[in-house]
Image 1 (spheres, rainbow, N blue to C red):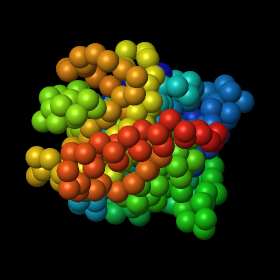
Image 2: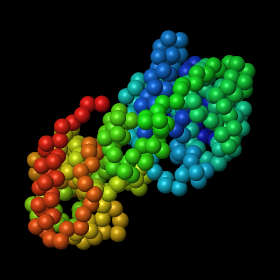
Image 3: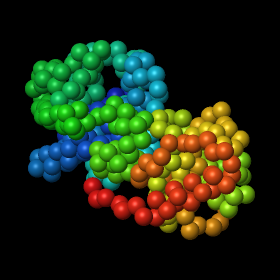
Length: 310
């Protein structure tokens, strides 16, 4: 997959005839996957190259529609996931106020036609151009019917639209099992292991403390069963996300993981942590003995957890 960036007044980048899907694709959830798979199928059938148009940063951040400034899938992870589908192009539009101010007609002419788009596949709620005034049918109109379009039906879960908003709500409730079913994979947090307060080590339960970037979606504080990926190895673990109210309470949230059956110094190393299941809320313990007893129970829960298939 070739990654291409489009900037204001530098729009024309692709010379191949392409069929494309367009959207933010934060999360790359099951509804997104349907759009991508349909794009790939149409590409194979018609002999055109396949492409995905997306935006960076998220338009809602620039337009101040979303003040959280968080992603379900940060940009680097999105590139990695999209690369697994077999698309020919990932075309990233550097979103700014100039792009936001483009009329639907200009968007079609200066971006889609300029990059030899022959057909687009979009979701039922796709909008584009200034203040979202453009509709899928306008693509045919403003391209003088040089671009065909396909609109995919809404995908729902328990009568709610499958989308980034729903996934963020579920993460804030700790419902990572449902998130897995909507993403088609576990929600992942990744980062560099940094030094913590060393309390876990003194209790013989050392933890890997992650330096988590601020753009990860907000998560319910508490204890989770996790899988940890370190240097191509996979481990079971128990992670706590919170402020450590029992010992050396922090002002900001920290993410620390006890990796089961692992012994070694991993400071400075980069790890990925998949959230498998929520165990319990964060608790303030009256003593270290009570803390150790609860952690032993959490580890027992993790070891007996039966992974469910998607």
